[in-house]
Amino acid sequence: MDLTEEHFFGASERLGDALAVLQKQAGAGAEALGYFGDIARELHSIGSWLRRPAQVREWPQHIMPPVYGLLFAQAWELAFPDLTPPAFPDGAERTEAGWTVHRATVWFGDTHVPGWLDLKAPLIVIGHLSVEGLLDDGDASESYLAVAGDVRARAIHSAADHLVLGTLSAEVVFCTGSDGVLVTGGDVMADLFVPAEHAYAHYGKLRAGVVGAGDRADVVAERLAPWLPSGYVRLGVPGTPVDRWRVLQEAAVGRSPVLAQPRPVVFPPPALLLSALAAPAAVTELDLSGSRLHRVPEDISALTALTRLDLEQTPLTGLDGIGGLRTLEHLSIRNTPVRSLAPLQSLKDLRHLDVSYCEDVQDWAVLLDLPALDTLVAHGCALPPQVRAQLLTRLGERIIGQGPLPA
Image 1 (cartoon, rainbow, N blue to C red):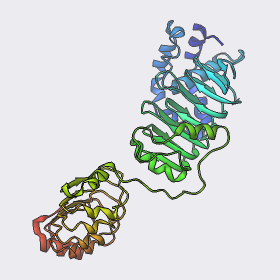
Image 2: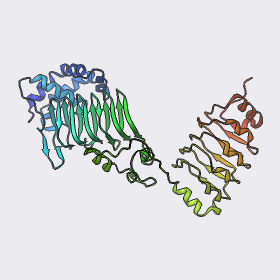
Image 3: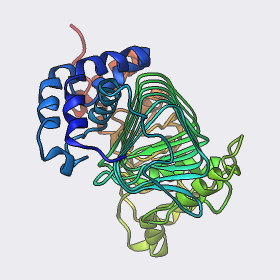
């Protein structure tokens, strides 16, 4: 359906009523309407845009963000109740896999799309939307999806703005890029939900079996690897280690590869560690901070000249294997999930230790058994009172981050 100036002007007169209708229909999900700003306070500005003669030509550039599109579509329906509202497949073109929307489109009523739905322009649905395959909302620079009800699809790929006032459900949801945002007024339901670095907000609950969030592709890959069959995730590979399109395409045809139970996964050691082990005698210092080191390998003992090792912000939960570093003098495990310090008892030359923000340690008393310990950095550590008192007596000002003994 082609829009005219009359349509935009008529909609501008019913914006307040449209907002009330959307809020009532969405119920608790109406909170999502406020994600992009105080919509009630912006009604006058939106109305002014709609009354501009150039608006017809510029549609949909000024009906953004997606909440404006929902508001406009609902106001349009209220302003012209006698018109037959557009519905699927108006504005969509048939493709081999399903349907593609190439121009700004509004569908009224609950909509079922038989096949895949690919957006190259904004799509607004006043009702529920179900897609029998993959729903791809396109790119943030050219499209968005705004739905007044629920969205259901076998698989969803989101890189643009995606506003759903109801529940969003799919077997697999992958988000990419950081320009768009996925917002739902209801629950997000998925076997596999991978927002990665994409912004998202839900005013219901997140009901996902596996969540892959984070702005580092290697971290997301590690979280997904146990839940996907071998070959879908290439650990230790730079760039894009998860074959997301393979996962999405298989889920879209009803063959989701997501496993019911996690499988065992062997995480490869960081490349920097492998390089050090290739020429061990020359290595005196090794900084693996921020690397994806999950365990200390036994063969690290080959680094016979190593005096300093930095393991800050790694996913290490244990230090087994570190005891072979007999020459180690300086060690940092700051901000790691290490649970036990017992392996440190073999490090007779360890003088400087940083355990700051190691909140999972269970055996702090091991610190008392390190004979050469001269400096301890322990910011954010809840040391047992007796251990803390003995360390303060022994180290004095050389215990950093614990403060003095109480008077």
